[in-house]
Every structure is written in C-alpha cells, then in structure tokens.
Image (cartoon, rainbow, N blue to C red):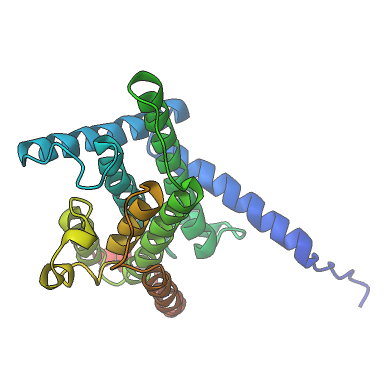
Length: 274
C-alpha cells in the first residue's frame, strides 16, 4: 500500500537507452574477433584487400584484363567484390549473433533485437572501413578515382548490407532448432554467391537465358545497379532497385515471425543434447 511505484521511462529515454545498448554491443562484436581492436580492424582491411587481389588475378587468368564497361578495370572489380563482401559478412554476422539461449541473454537489458542489430552494424563498420582504406590507397598511390554518382553507389552498398542482414535473420531464427544444418546452409549460400552474385559478369551483356539464372539473387541486382551509378557509360537496364528491397523486407518479416516463435519455445537444454 505504501510501496512507491517506479515510473516508467519515457519513450525518448527508452530510445536513447536502446541506442546506447546497441552501441556497446556493437563495440563488443568488433572486439570479439580479436583482442586488440586496432589489429582486428587492420585484419578486416587485409582480408578485403586479399579478396580483391585474388579476384583481379582470376580475371587476368581468364583473359579479362580490361573492364567490359568503359572505365577503370580495378574499380569494376571493386564494385563487385565490395558488394559481395558486405552482403555475405552481414549475413554471417547476423546468423551467428547471440541467440535466445546465449549467456548474454541472461542480462535483462539484452535481447535478440540488440544482438542482431549490433552484429549487422559491426559487419557494416568493418566493411566500410576496409573499402575506404583500399580506395584511399588506390586513389593516392595508383590513379585518381572518379565515381559518377557516389551517393547512389553508397546506397547500393547499404542495400547489399541490408539484404544480407535480412536473409541472415532467417538463419538466425532457425539456428536454435538445428545449429549444424543451419550453419551448413548459411555457408553454402555464402559460397554460392561467389558465382551467383554475378560480380564477374555484366548483366547487360548476358543473354536472357543466362541472366535468368541470376535474377533471383538480390545481390545480383545491387551489384549491377551500383555499376550503373559508378560508371558514366553504363546503364543498368535489366536489374531493378525494387526487387532487393522487397526481398529484404519479406525476409525481415519472415525472420521476425520465426524468431518470435523460436523464442517462445527455445530451451537452454537444446544445446546440451547436440
């Protein structure tokens, strides 16, 4: 009767507290891969640079030493590699985020939304930093870079990240049921995107029969649209912006419903029987 009731925080305060939790969880995700934060970020840059070099060598071995689009060959390769890495890293980070039975979920402020958002933001930060460093080095040491519409190209990078995180949310929701199977399926999808993303091709130069093999992939659309923004002499006629956005929204809806159902039924004893 005489007990004082705690006042519920306002929505603005709750939003700030949520953003603060996401910020700290993002920092934790960045430090999780390496004890030293600086070394971890350097390793992200090195991995992205090595991937770029490998694809350039592959193009040379295949006899494609010149860009099929009028412009810088290295920038053409970067347009596919950066979108691919951002998409797959976001998918892997979200799929591997702390689940409902994770020890982190024992702390009351923590919840799956914070875990998923922080994992996706950490992946985005690493890839944007790696891309900026590589572009700066290439621009400074080799040749000046000219991008036709930088804002549009950056928007396609964010769309690649968003679609990867959305697809990763489905794997995240299904992982407590069959962790091994979901991990295998996630790896298969990421490896399949080495070819299925279409980063080694130009959509406008593919025949309709072959283009239909890649149309299902939202990453194929974002890469082609990014090249349309990056190169003055290229028009992305056979891909659209609507498709990856719709796919990402549908995947988020399915992933949230599946995650809600999983959270209601999951038990910590599931991990003991694996």
